[in-house]
Amino acid sequence: MDDSVRDTRDLTLLEEIERDPDTSQITLATRLGVAVGTVNWHLKRLVAKGYVKVKRAERKKLRYIITPEGIALRARLTVAYVENQMTLYRQVREEAQKVLKTVRKKGFRAVYIVGDGDIADVCRLSCLEHGIPVVEDSKDGSVATLEIKGKQIVLREKKSE
Image 1 (cartoon, rainbow, N blue to C red):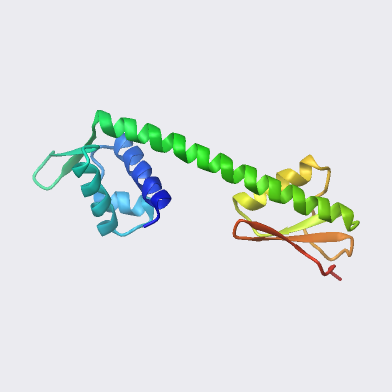
Image 2: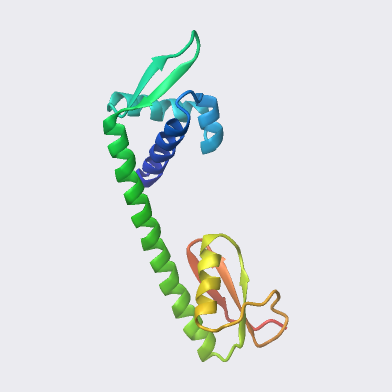
């Protein structure tokens, strides 16, 4: 498992446990969009490392308690997550600016963005920053089509007809 995926899951688990110590593994799995076994594995690892303690609240009910070490881990993971997201934002913004220079150079007057999500949002913001209108369709030949492919912004060379 990728370290960033593990760290993100650990951070989410710690945040959820902090929000509701009486939460169940089924609820945690639903919130994380993973199997209960995955949550169980992460929780056992967090307990083994001393970040979380488990106490029996009722006969079949468990209560999860974040230790001071767990609070420190959550803080470190939060800082790392924010730094990672800012790095990604800067990279995407730089990519968008390069593509928009090409758009201007080729004489397009506006852009049509294919795709959605955070990358598309950064692309839209970059268009606004550069005074390039974002339109709802690409039927006009003077409109560039920018396609979001993963973390890349691709300029379709063929003008729409």
